[in-house]
Image (cartoon, rainbow, N blue to C red):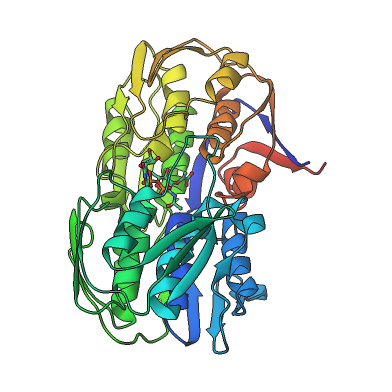
Length: 421
Ligand code: EPU
């Protein structure tokens, strides 16, 4: 298995580009099931999760592929023949976001059979709210042999009040509602930029959605949609990860394509930590201070501080001058990077959803590994700041969400390489 090897201590400087957003690309690829024809998706990051979602479409009978050469950030999906509306266990178990095909399939084909995602490393992650929304729209839901089956000739509009705010749940039910008969109102909807982006794409396809980006989304169902041609927004979590890389190395980096409006809570905390942040044409520049100040964060749904940036901020806190506190309010098991950071010399204690991080003078390189994507990214960051050599194994987690992270970091002066294994 591949490893990422980091020789710490370099101060980062220069420009680093941000790729298209993974968590926008996944629902948008699923949305192509909503219309026949030839869909073109641009700025699609080359990631393992994206490859899995294209595979999910292919096993259903669609053509779904990434172009090659200088067009390799473009994917094409062709839906013209019959679609077999089933997402098998083998794929869903590798990526729970495969469940995003449920809404589009039942809306357009009247039936969907999707392997029920199990728990995952960061938490139990049920899908009851996805199912609640589909049921409210008239779908008959059964669970057999580990598969969720949803059936309905044509969904009908309904008011769905989500009990918890869920990103993919909002996306799934929104995709189902665009072809339903009548009006659907989603209350307590997720407000993440990726939800807004999906609504924009669906509207380009002919849907009638209003309010995405707020907590009430209104969808007037239409009979038919047309194929999409769309370029995906930049990845705010990748951007945030590079901003932290600049911050903790005392660097000066322009994170190209980063969108400030998508990152407000993160920028606020970086400023509090003493970073100088400027919005420039084409991105956000972060200059790290000589000494980082401690900051406290409470993860929350957008526009709160994103749970997907918690592990990265923890690295910053680990080397700040003082004590910081993290409350992780979204996932119940998202501190798996902590024992690995301990191995690098960090001083962190955990009590339930709270982590108390006492800044240390230095981190030292070590062999580490993590069991989820953002935790792995935090270990690469820690390696950039640590003295000596850090080896991060289980790189397949990173490859699910960061496009060529080692190349991009090298481009701003980091000593990072991938060792094939
Ligand atoms: N939840 C329920 N019932 C549901 C759905 C969610 O109880 O039916 C709970 C979850 O267990 C969790 C909370 O609600 O405690 C929020 O979960 P949410 O459904 O919003 O998460 P998700 O849609 O499964 C997306 C991202 C995650 C990101 C979370 C939170 C995608 C493909 N994934 O997951 O991204 O952490 O929202 O912002 O959009 C990542 O990229 O590393 C990643 C994990």
